[in-house]
Amino acid sequence: MKTQFNKKMFVVMILLVLICISAIGTSVGTVETPPNVEPTKVLNCLKDIFQIDIDKYVATLTKSSTRPWNNVDLTVGQYELVYSDYDNSVGSSSLTVTFNFWNSELVVCSLYRTDYDDGIIHYIQKPDSDLRKTAAGVLQRYQTHTQDEQITQMIDLLNSADLTNGYTKTNNNLQLTVTVNERATYLMWSNAVNGAGYGRLNLGFKNGELMEFSDDRAFYALGSDTVNISEEQAVNIALEQAAGLSYTVEGEVISGFNIVEEHIQVQSSTMARPSESLLVRYPVWIVDLPLADIYPGMVSFIRVILWADTGEVISVQPLGAGFPNDVTDDLTTGSSSLPDSDLNSNSNNIPLAVYIAGACIAIIIPIAIVAVVIKRKNK
Image (tube, rainbow, N blue to C red; front, top):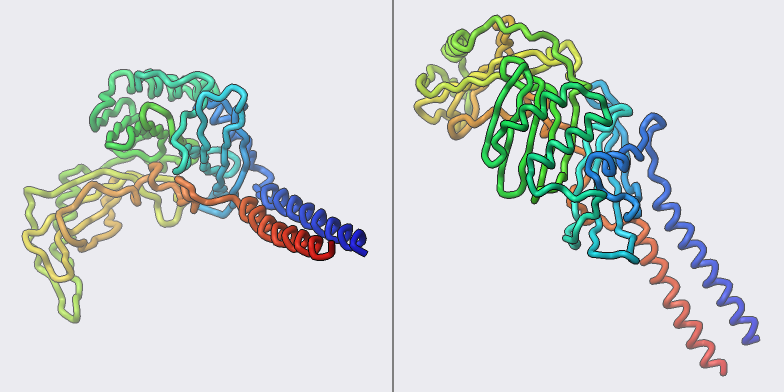
């Protein structure tokens, strides 16, 4: 009887183990992507552009989802890279890679160390200590991959750029903007019209290592490069609009604004026509009219946006506290306006397989303990 009981318990435990193993395999293997999307392009990008030694990592596709966005199929996803070359270990790091595909083209690839692991990244060739050389190497490898002739112009702009401070230079409708902060250095090349970008290639470096890459230029088109309205004319149109503007706060009509004309700010940007694709851009003027007083509703400036080719006014808005800052990317097409991937870039997410494995252990251990206790009692 004891032998029969022990055999039954053994069979039950084996079945539980098999079920758990099956569940773990299913949880990792059920991430699906559309037929026209090849997630392996992400790994190729890490190898060819970032120069990461992929062979030293186990790469697992942990997230992927697709939805329509701006007339393209947007696929967002995430890879987890776990260091596996223990025999030749000189330090390790677990990496999280997030990506965006537009239709079947990879447009965003960003790399993050996990929060709990700040180890080294294993490269085929380590980045140069000179950021300019590192960035030029990235562009050259990308040009080899894409045969994109515009990258030669990008390298020319890079060669004369100041990479230690904020910097902007435009040459032949190609603009390079350098942004430096305490966390990273960002290099952004934009196709430009009237000084405003509408399709961009971005590189983000942290401690000299490439961590962010995006290129959406192939998807954005310029509907027109015609600029018939000068900056001065744009200001005059904005002042006329402000003169007739009124708004209501708690039943009170507010009008007759006192504008500080010597502090008017004008910026160029690009927008899509309401009747056209969001990926087709046209030049616009954004005129910010600062007010001498704070008006009801904490209104401190009036923003007027108009088409630069026709002068037609797009919007007139009383806006809130403080004098206007630089135009935000909701009017432009830079990487910061790329759709939110809904993925935690510094991911603390534990894969579902880990949870399942933990649950299995939690089930099996008590059964094993009970089995041992019963066996001892039956002796």
